[in-house]
Length: 189
Image (tube, rainbow, N blue to C red; front, side):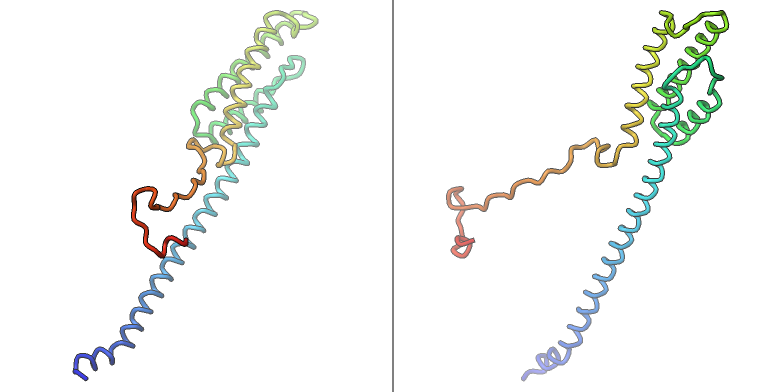
């Protein structure tokens, strides 16, 4: 037996061991990267869930406070201002912030005008045409705010702008009908 063959045979187990160690190291590195990615995704999901709950609470508080205009009771302006501040802090959507600000401003105008009408002796300030116009505007502003708020707190899968992935049918195997040569062992697949 030639010397090179003897050397190669004597080194073969060492080469196999080195290859196994390299493969194990590669697998371990990939496993660690995968675990780190899973942990990162879990942390991100918990953060999103907490932020979503805080947003839901702030948006629902603001919507509840702007649902009615009751000039007979003291103004809930401090509570409205607090809810509006929470919205400003929790959202990065300028359209939603603007909708909340406009709703807050228009709600304040409606409450003040109703309160002045009550103080002036009006029996039913809510039945006056001016109040009905304000109420219609408030309803449309509130609808805009609610639509934007719902879109922001929707689950991530529903908030995606790109269409959801759809499974595509498998490509047909090439065959003789497509002008490609087929190997004899592929015929039975």
